[in-house]
Length: 106
Image (cartoon, rainbow, N blue to C red):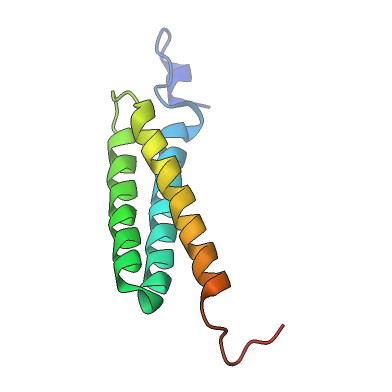
């Protein structure tokens, strides 16, 4: 039984805990950026630092987007989408162009 069921006329402000799930998704994305940034940092310091800075931007954007009463701006979401695509392309290029690890032969 939900909290709002006992009070007539009041709707649950966050049905299904959507706000909490969204906040966790932003946090997972920021952690993934930080992990990829750490891996890229081993090969290219400038690119790795850029990805680590982007992880902080993703985390901060998620905190702002999850605040009650805020409206999500499409420009912010576009920035995050472009950043995710850039990080994916950089990781792909580094994995394809970079030297092969000594212990892994497929």
